[in-house]
Length: 293
Image 1 (cartoon, one colour):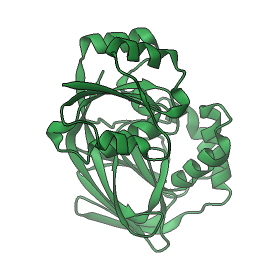
Image 2: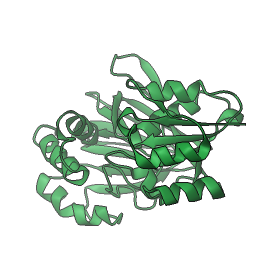
Image 3: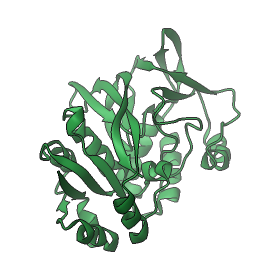
Image 4: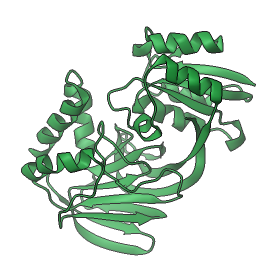
């Protein structure tokens, strides 16, 4: 059985990463380009038993996409060292970003299993694609927010940066006519966003799916018809507490599977990264990834 470390290149000087490397006696492999972590995870030795991942939600998502290319019996347990702008997966797991917590987890090796959402969509290159989501995927304004944040707001503190990006997106994105289907039900309406959640938070601590549990075999859907920038700002305190927002334009649903299509293709983000466009089909793969908690 072998143990490995994949680290975002920006985390190369992280003291916590260095401590984990010392405890395991193995050298981190640093990412060199987009989706490199995915390639590294997919090509791990068949006897890999533990994979330490140092980075944020984007790096964790890449790793999950790599592991999902492997047979289920060849997916090692994943130990996260939080180090990104959002760290929403780590927040759901209750992880701390310090050497003592990492040492405890390496010593105890307690694990939890999470579902993975499988997304069929159209890639940015306009070809059919399949991607996997460990945290939250969404279509509509939130995908535009992710693009704005990643392009021009990363210099701000994450909490402020995502809010600033959202306000920019509100100025140029309007609800679009879409068809949302889930478990046999179908509705046509104008949508600002549709969220398919495996976990509770996205956008650096926005509790968009207050009741989501990543091990229940279900998708939590949050759907917004039309929300103004002022209404969004007023919702932030409630979202930060991961509570339901009381607004007639917002619905909270649960489903085993769902799909979304629109007259004008809606952009899609998966785990904080722009990933393509509708039409989108989402299904659940139960307890497909194991985390060391």
